[in-house]
Amino acid sequence: MTASLTDTRSAELYRRALEVIPGGVNSPVRAMRAIGRDPIFIARGEGAELIDVDGNRFLDYVCSWGPLIHGHSHPHVLAAIGEAAARGTSFGAPTAGEVELAAEVARRMEGVDMLRMTSSGTEATMTAVRLARAATGRELVLKFAGAYHGHVDGLLAQAGSGLATQALPASPGVPPSAAAGTVVVPWNDPDTLAAATERQELAAIIAEPLPANMGVVPPAAGFLELLRERADASGSLLILDEVISGFRVAHGGAQELTGVVGDLTIMGKVIGGGLPAAAVGGRADLMRMLAPSGDVYQAGTLSGNPLAIAAGLATLELLDEAAYLRLASLTAELAQGLRQAAGSYPVQVVSVPGLLTVFFSERPVSSFADALGCDLDAYGAWCRELLSRGVYPPPSQFEAWFPSLAHTREQIDRTLEAAAAAFSCLPARGDPA
Image (cartoon, helix red, strand yellow):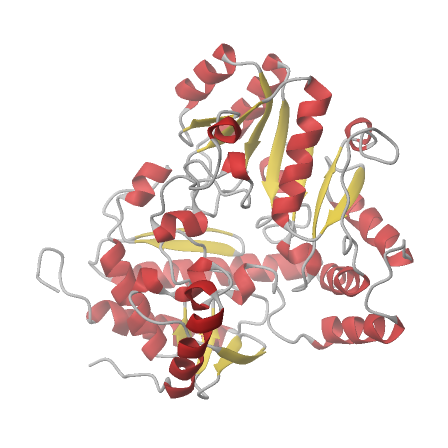
């Protein structure tokens, strides 16, 4: 039997929030509607755990949707933020930390010679697309169905992440002229990609090298290499969106793991250490097109905020080879354990270091269409069972799990025990719920 959570205080806060915040939340997936319950309001985080306003404790596999690779309230990161805050919270002027962070990113990422900071992944995407259009003199951008590159008007077509979770129409409020600049093709479909790049004059191909916004759906063998080849052959730029994968899956991001390097790279999440920060980086000739060294305009009052810079640098300082080996091992152990916990229940557990998804599907998931075919009701029921057992999963079939370096093997074992119990509570396929 499912244990129930004490959620009196969360329920009170949600009622108040509905009066002053649209939908009661500041980002749609937090509403937890996709798993059939109201949101849980969080009071604090400690290591790999969340504690809600009612005192319930959860093993956290959202970790702020990726930034907290070291878990919550890591003392090294908190100390760096505190020291920076003591010097001032924002200056609107250059700081030494910005130079240090740019140099560290350039050292880690093969395709990044220079870096421009922003406050969000959406802003970084806008900048990358603007640069690509300026560099090529073209307008069209090719993206993949199920990929989410922030809430940029023209890139919301067939997007994953919250849009898939909420089952919203492509992008209400986006004028046809904005959407007309985007070409959408299926992920892992080389024939359609080749045809689209031959038929259209593209400014850029934009892709997550390790997609995680329709759930984790890695590229098929040779597909990323084909992106690089088609970009070069068509005279377009390859923009790799590493907002999620950057500095999470490897020292140099997904580009280190795959060997395929973009002309421009979008970064976020880990680079801010849990504070609002993102960046676009790339070849020096492209980056020097940005004002004030070039004519492509981009600006932001809080870009390079000193607190976020400090948090990002402190986070990266702890990410050495041993850290990545440990995170890869923990992820693999969790993924294999979840497969075993499912027993005969039809799921696909897909993982790369630091990321995984449990797809409620009888077939392997290799595209957005496959992800949309998953049993969303079963996933929601399973998540509710996990929450009742003290495990906090992503409240959406289309989002990744984020194991952290704060998770211990004892906590992984507890997670797997809860997962097995949660699977046992689900009705057999074909049985009424």
